[in-house]
Image (cartoon, rainbow, N blue to C red):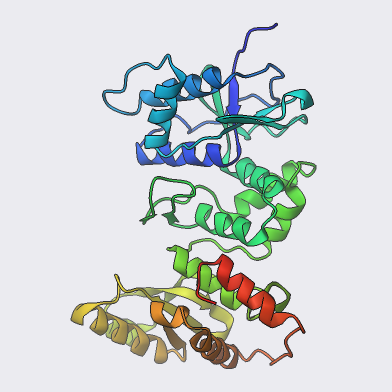
Length: 346
């Protein structure tokens, strides 16, 4: 049997590795690999775990070289790379899950920006390719949308990292995913990924902002209020009068419909407590009001209430001058299902 020369990690594993590299301030992923095809060689659990652990250990102070499967898996788990480890192969016969590893088919050549090299024998799929792979693997569309917002936003959850963190660098953007799909139109998962892009927006700053954007913006047949997907944390340049009130030249709007001049602000318990936050929020709303903007605040408690969300959606509809439309016959069921998938009481 030919000697194993490399493993290409994929799907959610690749995204967790990208977060690891980002967390450890690594620059090893600056340039894509020239590799465009995947190997056919069978990969053992020992190879898949130790190759990856040894490629990552150089970025963690004091980590020894790994020779055993269990110690490699423990190290990876502690660093946010969880089993099963996903990788790709061009051999259909190798595609199966074996304990802590799972092989997936990638038999077509991909564009030259699809893989990054961690070590000579260790490559990972780009965030764009990994997203498309997750679209092929995951049947749930809302899960895929949440993943897309996370990859294109400035936060991470345990889905791709160790814990929920804020003010992190986005792994990709909707435009980069769109461009990748144009270069690789026949990839498995590309159809669902293109559909997801219709409802994705860059720049979400938290999981709750993402949930609110999907709840308000998704069409009714998906359980949303049908108000169109907003721009996330969109910068608005202030005129002289507004700038004097806000004491800054511009503001960022959490959920923004700029053509209608509507700003929906998610007022998290953490960021909007205390006298300073109250004064800041007041200045913000007053500054935008001088420019004929409508600001609607949404608290965590309100998001957890279906009745409150109905009222907020109606306020946004009026402010954006959207025409009121009758709900589909199964809207109630789909709306409750959407809330459940977004982690909201229903």
